[in-house]
Amino acid sequence: MFYLRERLAAIGITGKEAKLYLAALETGEAPVHLIAKQAGIGRTTAYDVLARLVENGLVTRHEKQGRIIVVPEPPEQLLKRHETRLAHLRDLIPELTALHNASPIRPKVRLYEGEAGIRTVLHNTLECKSGVVRACLSMAEMLETPGFEEVDKFSQERIRRGIELRVIRTRTEEVSNIWGTNPAIQRELRYAPALTNFSMTMFIHDDCVSLISSRRENFGLVIQSEEFAHIQEYLFDQLWLNAERSQA
Image (cartoon, rainbow, N blue to C red; front, top):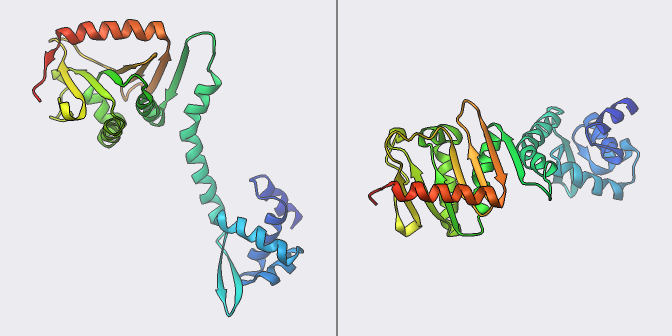
């Protein structure tokens, strides 16, 4: 049993939690006092430990004839628990990596890989403080990754936050008549001059320039630099002046 407690400790189930969990598995459905006795811990302490096991989904409890009955979940629940945690961690890694690479001295360049990274870059754009986001959109690529639902979710949140969007797209990449000019929700669409084609999507706001690649390269990139953002904003505005207005 000591060997099993050591193995459980390696995945974060330690001390009295491990003892009570193993006792529950060994005893099966039983009252708290019997499992506590099997585990060799006090009954009062057992209730506190039991609450943590229930919270982690390792056991359930119900009342029967005035007594609390403990029911151990199948051991496979441990695997499901850690698969869920691993999935959350994978989504968190791009943000943690960005913080790790941050520097207070030089411009910050943050690379986010994969679909989770692309979603992070897209939604980070909503942290805009100036209230205006400029964007050159590759519609065909955006509808492929991160996909319609994710872009629509971004759009709804932008509207909720009251952020104005000025977007330039290319007619050659239009795949459907969506997200056009709509003054009511502070969105204006213009089309770039003929022969212009965007293989990537770019957002400009505050001191940030955010890039989303094609599905083939599958990454997001954020460059935080006041000077770089300023020159990109200037170039965008020049293209904006020569772009064709879209019908509302």
